[in-house]
Image (cartoon, rainbow, N blue to C red; front, side, top):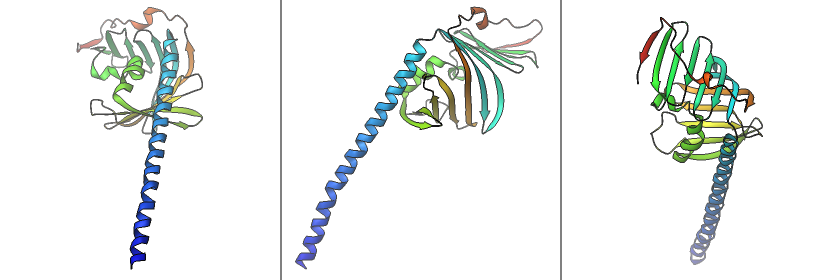
Length: 214
């Protein structure tokens, strides 16, 4: 009986260091993963810092179904232009215009409004990460930086940024609780082409219906 108790005690004591070792190993792996995510974010930010303007072809899918194809133009600071079929979205960094050519209707909003925040490239790579848990993994030959909000401030559950060897974002996967999975693919980048400022201003066409929400 004594030997049985001693055997049980010995097994318990032997198991405890294994648990500690496992926890330490897991903690080290987590620390390394966080370090890798931080390094990837730093590379993305450095690349973005070297770009004065860019253009790219863009394809958006919602839950696996393509619903938009077009072109993106960006110029520092926060000037954006999206060209889709019958839809034109322009921002000069202060005001945003959403023009539906088919309906001949323009919606004007402040750039800082909640619905426009997701359009901000600067906010996506500089501000969002500070409020999110970061991790990284590899997929389809790309490194992926995943952002998961630490609270319910944001309208998304997570964002995964696919990054190529030049540290350019080639895909963004947004887990939106209201819409589902939104996938945005970026191809045919052109960098630092001195895009004209006129690309990022807009005057509503004569006779168009204007809804000013500023």
